[in-house]
Image (tube, rainbow, N blue to C red):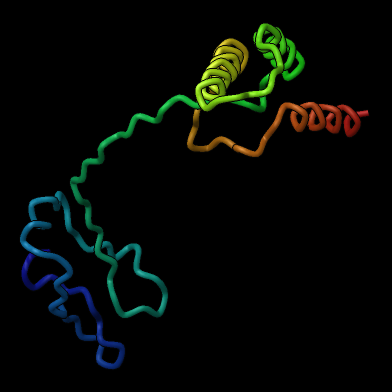
Amino acid sequence: LPLGTPTLQATRTGNWTRPDNIFGTENVLELVTTCVTAPDLRGPRTDHVPIHLTLKLSSMKTKEAPRRNWRDTDWEKFNKRLSTLLSPIPPQPLASNEEFQNLAKHVTKAITTTMEELVPHTKPCPHSKHWWTKSLTTKCKQLRCLTHE
């Protein structure tokens, strides 16, 4: 604020003053675009005038990694496809660490392939309801139909 701008009115005398309130450093001064009093925003029975401060700040946007939407997965198709990919692997006792690692690699590949084919990606939104499911949408539609009858 410019020097001498009143921001405080004494309750007893009604005189205007400006207390020396410093809230930042010289580095912050570069970021200030506007700093003005806002007397029209002063609340009832308050002694301070609000100060409207605008800062020029920038934020880096983060790129969110795509995630899978497991709720929209057709589990019958998923299980059927996974069974098809796992069927060539015969069940057998594992005699060595090498056999175990080989089996783990094949099972992981089958799961990953099935997931890439049948689990859709989600489109993240900051306002989305992460707990919402398609069955809740169906129930809401049914409720609306019943209330309009």
